[in-house]
Length: 328
Image 1 (cartoon, rainbow, N blue to C red):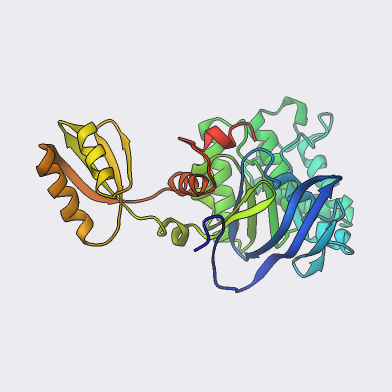
Image 2: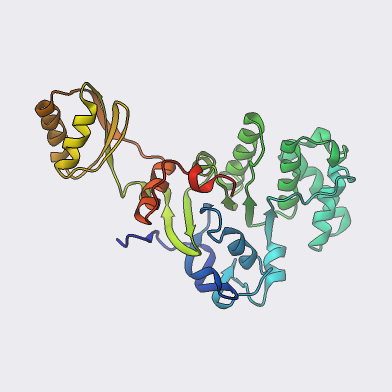
């Protein structure tokens, strides 16, 4: 496996694909020869600030021209068929895209009309979309009176009004309290699992991505750093977690001296799984240094763990995703 790029997937129904997709602004290369294949379903778009996520989204929406390479969304060419792409996807932007002086029902109806829907049909669909996102009873309130969570839900309704095959959601839970965040993520989950729609979700919150998404695309400095199913990627670096008592620092030092990879926080250590002998080697090391192993089990990796492993391979010494993703 390459130290900088992992790609694990089986090609099925591709909703987004690119070949050597490149975008430069003068000498600055924002997207560097991206070969990406995104399947039908739910995919998280991750990357540090400046990784190229925003440029990638604008490119696949046909809003900015490529420098070189090719790209398709739902089979449409990003170079020449941007209008068709935008008519067939639902886009929920991170920025404030609502008219504060409109009530919610007419804001969502207007979004439908902008992509060519008949006004009567758009109105009917706006009622349905607002019910779906939990705003049925507030549909006649002005957007300016809405909380952040209600505004985010309205943006999602705008993206869903024409029943698109693909929803692109940029930081959908940004600024939401715990209750509104849970509702937003559950709605996106239902849209994928029950509505049989695809979602590309850009977020800096690992827990959110892991709740909604089955796959990830990780960009770094305009390049593809990792791509594939989250579960497959997490299996690349298996670890054993131990809880120890006494001489923890000596235990860590000895494990490292014996060629094992260790991540330690206090009395909890995670050791790289290098085969069945790893368990015996850990216990032997504990006996040699006089450390009690009070608990030992296979560690179930999270998306946060995967992110840290990939960033480490790219040469970044980070302790949490917030070190790089915070404020994206």
